[in-house]
Amino acid sequence: MEVALKIDVDTHQGLGEGVPRLKAMLEREGIAASFYVAMGPDNSGRAVIRAFRNRGFLSKMIRTNAVSMYGLRTVLSGTILPARPIALAFPGIMRGLKRSGFEVGVHGYDHVRWQDWIDVLGDRGMHEELGDAFEAYRAVFSEAPRSFAAPGWRTSSAALRALDDMNLDYRSDTRGRAPYRCVVEGQTLATIEIPTTLPTLDEVMGRGDLGDRAAVLDFYLAQFKSDALNVHTIHAETEGMGELESCATLVRALKERGAVFVQLREIASRLKAAELPACEVIRATLPGRAGWISAQGA
Ligand SMILES: [Zn+2]
Image (cartoon, rainbow, N blue to C red; front, side, top):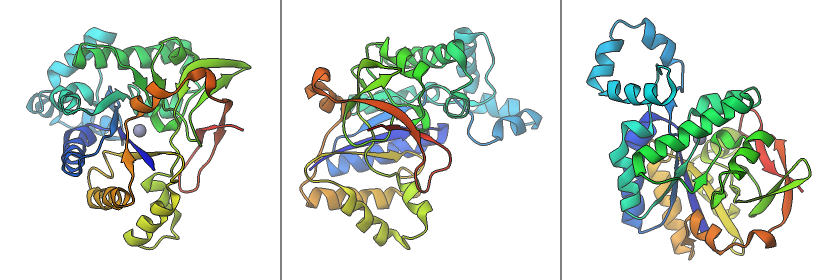
């Protein structure tokens, strides 16, 4: 049984606190994983508008050393960001992941903007999101990213095409069954898509029919397929914070069942794009998740 842990990092707190805890747990268990970090401002919640009304905003910015980050972002785009940065606030944590052998890819720039406005961003907005995300990655690592995972599993024809032009090793934008190539308006794109194959913990807990953590664990263990690639997305904000122990328990249970943990880049490197099925990317809903996600079509 092969298991790829895809770890999405959506927020400043997720990277600053959740990622170091997850990293320590993964190292303790001796397993591989792939991290995808939202590079840009943390616009989660409505803290932004509150912050501007708050008289302590300026001192908070200085205290958290955010000023230099705003400075860099200002240079990059010519605008001032009211939200806390994510990747650029913790370059040491980012580099530490790679130094320890973990894979690090891009999880968009402004997670909230991408998720909420993907269909109205337009070509210019889309290229801004991708350009700023890749620029921030390069600022941290001094090299170009090789993979992308769409915020909220939401993509569009414009996003799929724009990312295809970047010649990445693969992307992981959708929910689905197995690796494939995306068909956009009749055209099969070159980049390999490795979809998330399992439901996320927040979806499972949101179902309401699994009473406690033991039931959730049993549910997951029944989901993993022994004869297929299992891509499980976890979140720095969930499994890295309050659900760290649940995650460690699942990892140990999978190890006991002989699971081999692989990184998505390893999977991509052994796949041949030409041999993969070509599938439409459809929009669907999932139990326990609000709104639509992009999924592998028939
Ligand atoms: Zn995310």
